Picture (cartoon, rainbow, N blue to C red):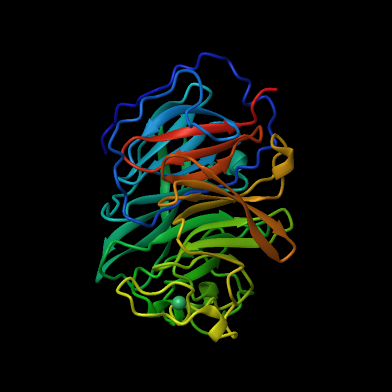
Length: 395
Ligand SMILES: [Ca+2]
């Protein structure tokens, strides 16, 4: 790994971002569509808004090279992954970033590389972080999830242990998905994309195109819905997914999922135990080569999405907001959009959801999360992706 020089923001004002600490480190960030390097290098913003035309104050803190995920730690610092295989520890409010050693070699190509990062719910006690990445192996490539102990003082991951892998490994560099979340049940949830191979999403001998639920050590819980159907099937909680780049629990413990559709048909779903979401048999989008895929309403046995987007927004990430800094948004979901260059606000109501608002962010949004004080944080896609704090405007 190479240490990359960082463009840092000198913040003019001393903002007490971390004075309150409700510690909910919602995670978010992910990838699908090919990364397009932003043409103009985005300089760090020393003062004023980083984004024009949005109804909140925005402050850029640092820039990263193809950032993919961001996650807050209990002390108010955060971790940021870069797709090439670099993990950085970022302190606030200054945005100083320090590379963390010990990341395994990643298969950096296309949509693949270092992916998500999430701290264990008891990180303050055990120091464990979980991260996903694309790896080479027999037959091709696949996503892996590892856990390790973060020694922030030493700037290193210790005791790295791979606890899950996509099977089988296949050709290509797309649709890893590999988003990670911990549920209120303490379980580890992994979104596993179809690797652009379609049929594995319905094949229970593969964990591709699935939502996986594991114990925090990677073992399989006995109460998973397909626990009696074999080793791989036992991991599966839900199936028929394409490229699920965002998973997030709400305050009631419901799990919401957002995924990229093919040509059209991005989806927002409420995940049900053992549910089949129908890909590639049904989709409200169609194949890129123009061949139709029957829409969801033709096959009611599959769970249909609560929201579909055509034209697509290319969702990258998902979080459910639990803060109060934006009091009118408490309990709403937020999704980053890549091609849409948006942050989408989604109102959740019982078992339903609707798009409420779409903010034009002026850049592909790769990740979104919530800071300890209830600010929203986004990270842009690309070679100079900025880490940006969003907060209500004063007055
Ligand atoms: Ca269709």
